[in-house]
Amino acid sequence: MFASLKIRYFRIYWIGMSVSLVGTWIQSVAQSWLVFQLTNSAFLLGVVGFLGSIPIFVFSLFGGVLADRINKRNILIFTQVSFMFLAFLLAVLTQFKIITPWQIMVIALFNGAIMAFDAPARQSIVVELVGKEHLFNAITLNSVAFNSSRIIGPTVAGVLISVIGMSGCFYLNGVSFLAVIIALLYIKLGPGIEKNNNSALKDIKEGLIFISRNHLILALVSIVAAMSLFGTSYVILMPVFAENVLGAGIRGLGGLMSSTGIGALIGALALARLGDFKYKGRLLISSVFLFSISLIFFSLSKNYLLSVFILVFIGCTSVVPIALINTLLQINVPDKFRGRIMSIFMITFAGVMPFGNLISGSLAQALGVSRALFFCGMTCLVLFAMINLSFSKLRRL
Image 1 (tube, rainbow, N blue to C red):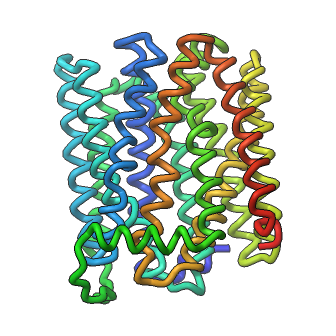
Image 2 (spheres, helix red, strand yellow; image 1 turned 90 degrees about the vertical axis):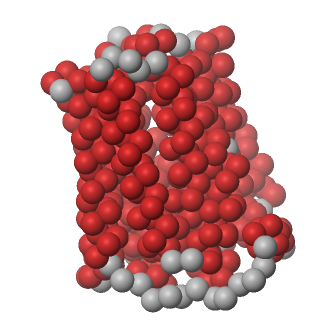
């Protein structure tokens, strides 16, 4: 189950990243609560989510080109230091009570721009640390780290906001970046970069042509895009759902988000346990349908404990297809395209998410949060059915 952690550099990187991710989730919950307190607006929650992700849609292709050209470790050191600076800036503005919604929006925009260059390098560095033999296990363990932090971070945030305040949460996140920065400074990678005199635009065009001719990649990124556009936007509405539908407050919000993390952790651990199993296509299709159905049931819930139970299923059925698709993409592309292909993955995973946040935020403002989530769940169900019918070979992967 933990085979890739036997590789020294990956183990160091994984531990550092795990610590940093906890801090990131603490800040995410605190920032959402801060925006909701300042504005009492579901729509502005969606706007902040939009601004935090739209740069990924705009700049990720350039981030992928950069990852294919220069040392990925150096890219990550620069991006992690930048994230740390922005976390401290948010902390200072909040501590001195001069924080405003537009300042949060600007910081979210800068975070998104940095993420556009961080994510392709972070996704594609894994194969350089572990090789293709351990790639599936490493990706699933990255999912374990990410989703463990989704359990720990929101739970701790619910307590810390009461104890050290929102500014304290932002300071804590800033300090947490030191763990991954130190890990990156310690690990060594070979050059692994081919000489390339092409322009960035020519490299982007080359990558897009490669994808357009590969129906498998098109099918996989279509699934990710559908999940990101209509499925995962439920997260941005969680503060509104916790307060207005369930009446659970900030502590209840932490419990809801932790439940999603528990489910996702179960899914990631199950994948790690399965190893390089045979029927990936069947599991992929089954999990996206179950995700849609779980989201529909969640939208209809008015009971806190029932919502927690359903969110476990949502978490499990959301992490499984993403981990499977990440692995299938990296295994099926040449090394020279990996950064660009992973930038496309990030565009469909996080880059289209801001449009989903705006849609769900607008629907929640107009119709109420429960009806907005119901619409998103039904839309996912229809889109996945269409993809399944259009790319029937997915089931036989």
